[in-house]
Each structure stands twice: as structure tokens, then as C-alpha cells.
Amino acid sequence: MSIHTLDPKRTGLLTIDLQNDFLHPEGAYGRAGQGAAAIAALPARIKPVVDALRAKGGTYLSAQFTLVPGPGGEPLIAPHLKELRPFLTKGDFAPGGFGHALVDELAPADYTVEKVAYSAFYQTRLEYIMRALGLDTLIIGGIVTNGGVASTVRDAHLRNIETILLSDGSAAFKDEVHQATLTSLGTVTQVKSCGETIALIEASS
Image (tube, rainbow, N blue to C red; front, side, top):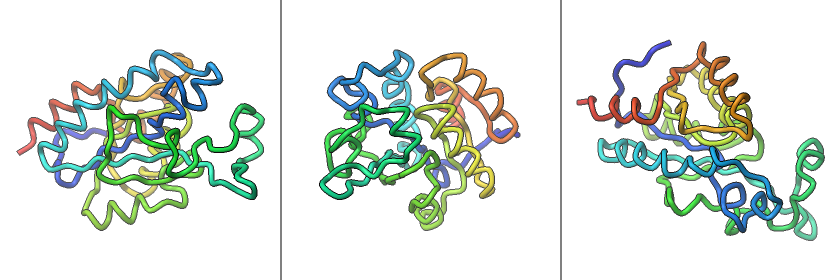
């Protein structure tokens, strides 16, 4: 698969889970000592891509992982996630909260989508927004490459949506997992660096 040209006005840049609860030192993962340098570096890498696309009339969408508050404020959380991340508690990833919000460096997005599972398409309004705006191509970055990013890329492929996966605009907690996922997704997406993607945007008419 290869994207040689794109129409910025029909293209959205979609970031996955670049939220304070994942990236900020005072967020849920920061408080639990969970983090990675590759993940912390993403907002600064992606911001120039956002700026380049917006300058050409494109759209920035942010998909944000959400834990819906249940009875007593305890989050409705999948059993497998609770087992993996036992530190998650009341208020974490709750809509409207500090932790749920997009990181300051990228805020505000043009559109925000709350997601409750890995894929940004699963039970969200993402596809509705895309169709309403006439978007048929997505540039995708965020975290983690082997989780929400991969699920979203594959779901886009099933919907005949063209995608560019940002090789250095996505990350995982382990680089070998990130690299392996880029390789495995190469059959369903075009993998490009942020710099290569900016060049593609700027070359568009």
C-alpha cells in the first residue's frame, strides 16, 4: 500500500490516547510510575504535523480513552484491564477531568472522541464525524502502537479508509514491541515518519 499524494482537506490527523492520565507526571500512570521516554516525546513530535495539516485545511481529531464512572464513582472497567492496571481508581480517565484531557501541547483538538476500548472506531462517533466532514484519509499516531493504534489502523482498513501510521509519532512501552507492530501493520497502512508526512502535506496543492 502506498500513498503518494493526499488532499489535506480530506485528511484527518488522529491521535490515540495522548492524555494527561497517560503522559502527565500527576496523571494516573505517572503517579503509578508507569511511563516511557518514547511516549513522553510524542506530543512534541506530532505537533508540527498537526500544524502543517491545519495550515492546508486539514482536521485534527483526538481519541481519548475513557473510564465511565459507575455507581459511587468507581470506574466501569474491563476485568482484563483491572488486572493489568490495578492502580486505576476513581476519577482516572473520567470525562471532564484533568486526566482525561488531551495534553496541553496538542490541545485543543478540532474534534474529540471518547473511546472505551482499543479502537477509536469502536462504539464512537469517529466515523460519523469523518463522513460529515468528507474525510477519507487518516494520519494516525499515539499510544500504544500495539494496542489502540494498531486496533484503530486495522479498523480503518476494514472501512476502506486510507491511513498513514506515524512511525516516530507512535510508541509503546517497549521499543521492540513498537517496531514489531510497525512491521506487522505494513500490509494495511503506509508507515511514514513525522518528517516524511509533513513533506507529503506541504507538497499537496
